[in-house]
Image (cartoon, rainbow, N blue to C red; front, side, top):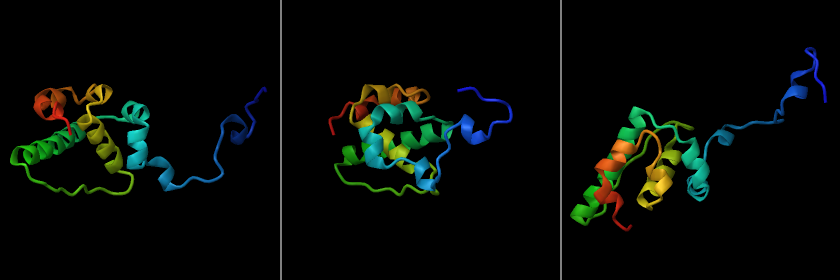
Length: 119
């Protein structure tokens, strides 16, 4: 198929008829089940690395005290809460590719004792 400059945009790219906000977020169970895609798509900022560190530290504290701990994860729709929880789950599950996500190297290295625990 040949396109000319005056071709309508719909002829050049595939545009869905309808897009909803939920199309741009992952569900926690899907993020874990499709861990390759979750890991590939995860972009770690300094704030995310710190949040992952805090999550792992919360788990470490619970393990050392042998008591349950809770936390609130707060953020607007589409801010990455489910993605964060999926990555945290994958890290704690021992998935090696999750522990190799660029930007998390220092967090992982500093928390090997927690990550080596069988949970």
